[in-house]
Length: 547
Ligand SMILES: [Fe+2]
Image (tube, rainbow, N blue to C red; front, side, top):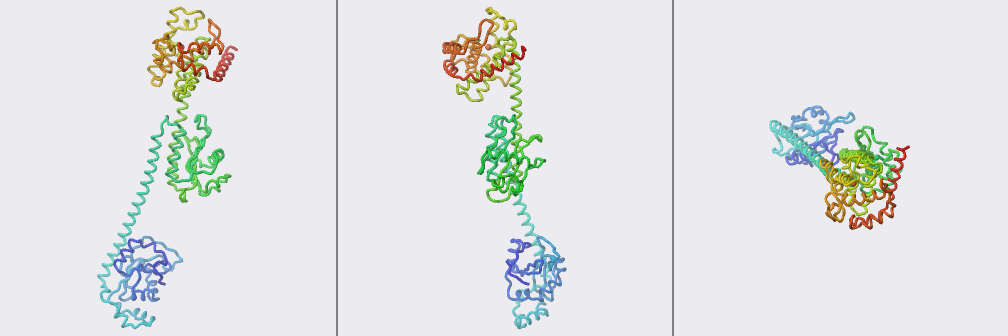
């Protein structure tokens, strides 16, 4: 049965080959496995008559096996009618198909076509005058056997060449796509790695990362949920959302927890084609398809990144999943660094607390002094509007401001009576001893001004360098005021502690002489609740020790 060329698809003929065959003006037929015949180009009258005849169809079926086996050969179907089977891009065989597999056939006439009884029979069946019909065949249309063989070789080469060009183009396209995807992945990871410093605010880093990912992957939204890990500090249990998501953040938290439980144990990302299948309430209302990617560090879960539905309506691909996996690896490294940094900070502060407690313990009257000075310094620095990083450095400097007392004889430090001039001179060395102790510790260089200058006075009457006014480093002025407050508020061997009102009155009186007047003004307005809580804690500790 002959059908129009567009009546069925011809996957075995590439557009490139079809165009080439068309230019040659050859009669080329595509035969489907079920025996339907379609010419690649419209046929002239004589070819149309032959190809649509039952005689031709039967002959094709009869020689089918030879046609399948004889690719590139010249097969005589009947006298003067040669068929050249061409190679196909793909082969398949189905038992129910009449011809078993598709064929691509070039039909060429030889000089003996006019003698073929089959042609005479076709004319008879169509009530055509045979002589007139044969007279319409132009000699130029006929090729001899040698020419037919040369034509067969050329057609095979042409088909193979077209297939090879298509294959290479397809490879090029795949490579280009892979290159583009790799570029996107590398570009994203590069952006993240350049942002991934410990100085970066972690929440801002994670939000930026999700935002970049949203743009590259093209999902409608992403949510990043972190576990309740205390070492993650502000990030513990936090949820970050980017894109358009129709759900309250508070509702996302329990959702994220349930999704973490659905993740595969091997830590691989998971593409969910139908969220209803996860059986989590409300999830299907959020998105139909979803991508779940675990955040892990050394097999410990840190959280989950999940996002829903592609903006262009396509499926979430394995490439999307791979990209998200790479990015969550970077996020996990960043988070593990945050935890490591937290550990180091805790260890650092713990060491400082232990050190300052050891110093304070030399004198029972100064128990907890360094911690209180650190706390007051922090309050004063915050009250003065200083930035968070500097406030924390001032706190640490407050903790170690008396570290130089290590170099002062214990007998002098614990002398219950009034100090002699020599003893006081020895005490006065402690800021410089402290600076010497710290000078070789790279991470504490910025704390030295606070340690060295916490006994300077605004009017220049302090020590060790008798600096005046704003020549005294700010850190020294802040700690000096906090130190004086705590000294006045604490019992000493030679006097009882002063009450808060008296102390504040003294600070007011000494503003502009001993203390920086601006700092003194801020100090008088501070809320001391956290100081009293600390004092209470110290008193409890002291009671437990004496019990
Ligand atoms: Fe001191």
